[in-house]
Structures are given as C-alpha cells and as structure tokens.
Figure 1 (cartoon, rainbow over the protein chains, first blue to last red):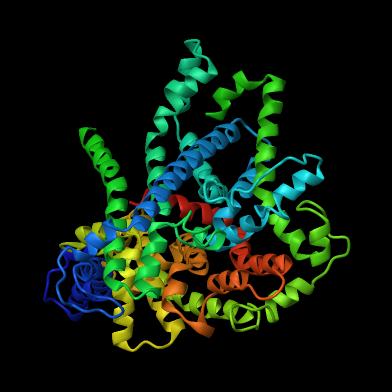
Figure 2 (cartoon, rainbow over the protein chains, first blue to last red; figure 1 turned 180 degrees about the horizontal axis):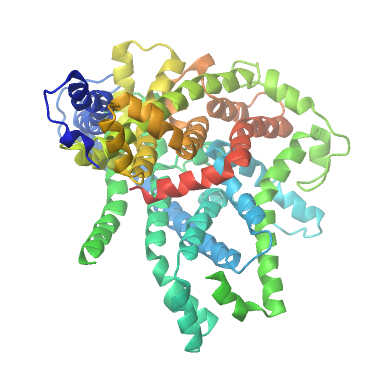
Length: 303
Length: 291
C-alpha cells in the first residue's frame, strides 16, 4: 500500500512530514548502499588499473595488474582449487541434504530432535569448524590413531598433510557445516508439495522411487536453485574455513582466490594486484549466479 | 505428503534402515562436538595415550582456564577472554543498530513506497550476492581517511553497513504481508510516520525482530574476514583470537587448550541456536529466498 501518494501535499505540517520523513529516514541506507556496494566496486575496479602497491597510487597502469595476475601460477592454482572445492562442496552438500530431507520426511519419530542436531553446525563459525576438524584429521593423534586403536593398523588418513588431498579435507569440513542447512531447505520444499498429486500417482500404480524421481524431486527445482546459489556463494568467498583448517597449505595446496586477495591486498603491499584478484572473484560469483538467476526469471515470465 | 508416502513405507526392514541412516548421520554431526568437549577435558598425557573417542579418566578444567586467561595468541599470552569481550563490544551495538535501521527501511519500502523505492530494494538485494572481498580495500581506505582508529568502532560500522541488506530484507518481507488498511486507518486518525511505526507495526514485529537479531548475532559473532582486516592487536574479535591461538607455535602443542578455546568461541552462537532454533531456521530460509 502506498500511503504517501494519498496525502495532498502542502495541507498541513503533519502531511508534509509524512512526505519527507520516509525519504529522510531511508537516506542513510541509500547512501551507504550506493557508496559501500556500488561505489566501492567501482573503486576496487579503479585500483586494479593503477600502479598501487603498499599505498594507493592512482597512476594509470592499464591492464598491467591483470597481466601480472594472469601470469601468476599461484593465481591459476588457487582458481583450480576453488573449482575442485566448489564442485565437490556444492554437489555433496546438495546430495546429502536432499537425501536427509527425504528420509526425514517419512514420518520419523523424533524428527524435530534430529533436525536440531543436523543443523547446529550452521550456528558455528567456520573458524571453530576448521579448528575442530584440524584436530580430528590430525594424522598422529586423530582419526588415524583411533582406527589403529580399534585394530585397523594399516589405516592411513593423512588428507590434511598431503598436498594432493588437503583440498578434500576442506570439502569434508565444509560439507559437515553446510549440509544440514541444505536439508532444512529441502525439507521445507517437501512439506510444500501438494498431497493430491502424489496420491493420484499412487492410485495410478506408480512406485515410491518413481514418484520421487518423476514428481517430487523435479518439483523441488526452486529449492535446488536457491540452495545452489547460496552454496556457490559460500564457496567463492570461502576464506575462514581454509585459514583455520590448513592455512592454505601444505605449501599452497589449498590456496584459494580469497586468500590470494587477502595476502596481496593486505599483507604483501600489492594493493593493485589484490584489487585485480578481487574483481576476478566478483566476476566468478556473477558467472555462477547470473545465468541461473536469468534462466529462472525467464521461466517465471513465461509462467 | 508424508501421509501419502507412509502407506508405502510400512515395511519394517525399510523403516529400520531409514532410522539407522538418520541416527548414523546424527552421530556424524555430533562427533566433532563430542571430540572437542572430551579433548578439552583431558590432560595432554591422556590425549597422547588415548584416542579421539576415549573419555577423560579424570576431568581436568585446566585447559579451559588456560584457554580463557593465559594461552598465547601470538606475542600476547592472556588467553581469549579479551577477544571474547571485544566480540561482545562490537556485536551488541552492531546488532541493535542494524536491526533498528533495517526495521525502518522495511517499513518504508513496504508502507511508504516512493518513486524509485523498488529499484533501490533490488539494488540492495543484489548486494547480498557480493563477495565482500570486492569492497574491503576501499573500505580500509575510507576508514583511514575518516581517522577511525578504534577497532570496535570500525567493526561496528562495517557490520552495520554490510548487514543492512539482510535486516532490511527480513522486515520488508514481513511488512508486505501486513494489511495496508491498518496503516491507512491510522493515518486517517491522524497518526504520523513514527507513531504508526512504534504503536502499530513494531508490536506486531516481535518474531521478525527475533529472526533478524539471531541472524545478525550469528553473522557478526562468526565473522572472520572483517575482523582480520579491520582490527588489530588487542582489539581483535574472538574468531581472530581463536585462529591466532591455534596457530601460535610456541612450545608443546596443547590440543586440549585449542579445543577449549574453540568451544568458548562457539558457546554464544550455540546458546542462541538452542534458545531460538525456530527463528534461526526461519532466518536461514528467509535469507535463502532473497526476495
């Protein structure tokens, strides 16, 4: 309802206040949004085209910083790690989340209690999660030792110190933290499905797996989409989990664009390069999210 | 839907299997918490002698004391209590300010729309997809220019600025469901902008306020990126303190102290989750819908 359009302007002080006050109250947010989001993106873009090193230096450098970035092996490796981490983290979280939601939706006794357990990691900081898993995955005293004590003496679990597998340790901890949340999204979606369609399919003699494969899971499409976008977003900006779990190591085995950006922008005095890598992170996020958003909007328009 | 499906899933073997999977999953989610807790209560000797699942023979609270008051976090050795306090000092004002401003914004964007207000709301929503890395370099410059020396002040500022998109979203999405007639009638009775907000809408908004505050508490308490970028030395938040403590390599690695510190860092948000899990889930799914 647009209340403000109904007041004839200039009648009384109260009406005048009602015209001005809303705009006045929202003005600070408009300002911080325009400056803090869009202005700062422009500023970062500008920095990425300059000679800035330790301090901002607005001497034009053209695409020098980007050439430097694209010529840096460390950058490409970090992007590769992000791709591996992103695909596995998003994919496994979606599968585990969906599976648990479907199982929980079978009239389970104690459902509320189980849900509470599945979801609590979401309340934790990635730093806490990373610290806990770092200890569990500790090859000397963690899971490996537990298996040895249980009698499986040849058990080796050195993901976290092995450069080839360290990224999977990050995936493991990430899935642990986020899959319960995906479960909650899917469960809400499942509860929103119309009973009558499923009953009709049952009367037609469709088996339970068929009903799930043909009717229930396809109708969860919007949930898939929003879960995917949130997980992809978590993956692209992912920083704290890796910092706590592996610190980007061993060596640079779990280095990510976010760590690259942080180190060049804040600790190595390479502002321009940091800005260029931040812009690439923005493009990555857009590249993942935009096509989905666009296709979904088109679907909605078509009805 | 569960009803319809149930008829087909009465086979007891199938149901037993479902329960087994669900219980195993529950154990997998609980395992790290169990490991953290038991490790924090063991002595270092016990940790080396036992394994992840073994219970502490005698319960030691030494690690907790060390973590709280005397563990080294870099050069300083004062435990995490200072960091814990810093996090509280930044979190409380940031949560209150961002919630209040978000409530006003949501009220305006639903009840007092003006030309361009929908466009602005879209612009704000797009901000929820931004990786913050793309704004932190200019933010650091601006803080330097403003001469904001105080780390707590800096963190309150960034958490308010980059939390407003979510708090506004929560309230706006709630207020569009409130009948506009309510506001119209109040206006005819002569109530103005603030009066309508405080007397009519705010009392209706308690659940939304809960959702919003719980969301902001977890976001701000758990943040690491802003903390590590915009604060320094003795005014860093808890997440940074914990990370420093775990990565400080002086002397023998004290796993029990690490775990105690991690639990201390987790307690506030776990308590919030335990008390308001209903609102917590609602916030998560509301954030998921994003308009």
